[in-house]
Amino acid sequence: MATGKPTYARGQAVSITAAVGANGSPVSGASVVATVTRPNGSATTLSGTTGSSGYVVLTLQLKKRDQTGTYRVAATANVPPGLSSSAGTSFTVQ
Image (cartoon, rainbow, N blue to C red; front, side, top):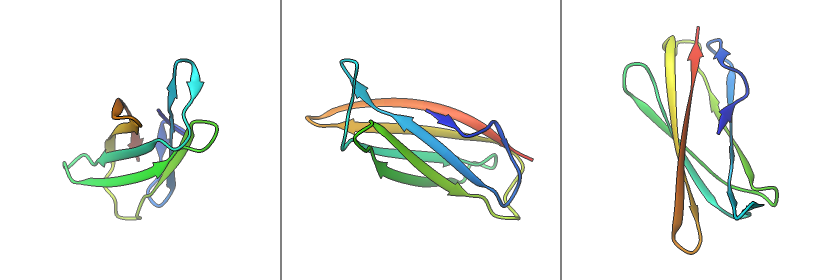
């Protein structure tokens, strides 16, 4: 999992890309849920489904008044039949 860049300005859109694979092959149709936690502890949940490439891009639109500081992203991918995997990353808002 990665963001498009390490630092964003208020009002920008944050792209969060997650890749899901199994046995060295991309997994299509995996459900990905990501929780973005702001510096004050409040959180936003984003979700999506991987395409044939095994990737999903989730977008968080920052508001002009969002807090500055480090935002943490924790994501879980659910892959049928009943498997899951987790990953995390972070980015900074200035």
